[in-house]
Length: 277
Image (tube, rainbow, N blue to C red; front, side, top):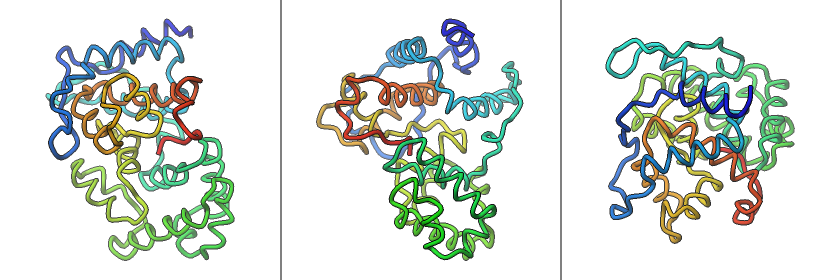
């Protein structure tokens, strides 16, 4: 399929409404109320330009299909949608707990290293109960290829211990029935789980309209003038979630992240490549 065909297909299937929505999934007032950018039109133009340049990033395609599959059931007005669902693959069957740990392992390392670390962890401990029963050193050895193994092993063990003690099961599927604010409250109770990680879980694993701000997205947003040069990542997160239409958040986020990794000019503003978490 050519890039032009990919673009046409994405535009047909992105679930956009005729009237863009700016419903926020974040708390608090917009830190930059006088800044009226990015406009919905700007967001679409950047999305389309990056899609023509890169095509849709294959590493996020399965998550996108899962979002479209949820759209194929009923829309927010209870009307049957026309998007034809595609078969689920292994990534689309990923549990919320699997997704959270993958995102944690992706911190401060490359995507390939984090995926190797997760695969190594699952090979050594096929069930989360096995990880919970394992010694921290054994977990460290399993995820060492992803970097910061001692810190990440402690974080994973803390999450599992808390789930076992408070929920009686090593499972986060209950998050699917909670509101965005409730999910943020729940996940923020886990030591080592920060706002960006929570936002990634919301967008990738819970199919919520949230817009994570990683290093790449942050630097590009400043370069585009979507936030002031003096903005920090937290204020950028709030502002972009206010301004970017919900129906564009997923595609635009994935494409900005990909562009930040591939564009030589964008790389100059990033100390080293980091993953999506």
